[in-house]
Image 1 (tube, rainbow, N blue to C red):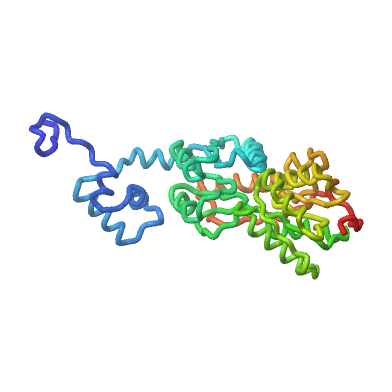
Image 2: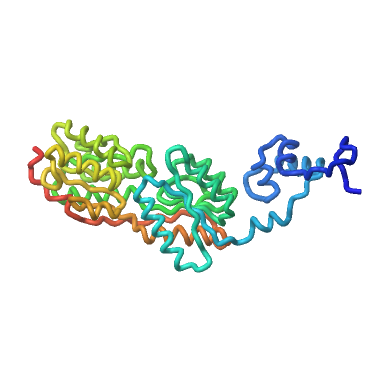
Length: 347
């Protein structure tokens, strides 16, 4: 006779004991119970003893078939990106190009947009049995990223963070902004402002690079950080502030290309044209920078190297071929028409 649940009168088959039941018995979350049975980092010795004891009491047996499926190599790498960021789109394209050189690897995409954050997008990819995650410029806190890394290897691209369990692939943002300042100084500019990126990934490092380089050139008295962001609208708003400065900066190093183009268009509409009246630099070297009405001088993040490195790290980590680490890429300044020698017209 089949085993029956107590009190069932033999009329029903006993329900299988699940990980949810174990978590309830042990007084912990399901994710923590999962960590214990996967022998993954993230649980104390005391917690492991408590969870396994609870499982023994209620007769829980891990499903070895499910465990094998989780460990099987799916060849699928998840990518989390923001649909509103052109630079992210370029990185996704680069990742696909890199994946073409790896016959057994494919990509699965999950978009971030208002109302759907990086963590929610990542959770959808985990349900698809991705071997690893590549997260492009995530906004969520470091702790949440580290928790995801307890499930699968995570490679964060274009953001600096302190999380030893997470791989990081990024450009040297501080050095990139320094290159822009050096270029503007070489053209004779001294009143060089910086439109920053607000709380966007990389913004703090670029701001530090700007301030450090202005001090190195003996121009700290002219340092001027204008609040901005990552969008063209943010650049336009910064343009309004810039026009109120007296005397007005003759050059501006902007957080990214999108904001730089927004700034340049807004200033041009109000009669302050680049490069005649103001020199402007961007950051990211996107297709929009090259195709702007006035082609934009920009800092390249070496997209091809960044994406190939990120994908290689994701695959190697998933297959156990390396430990987590950080790769910092040297930026490069791409000079176009948006900058000109200082002419004194801003005086």
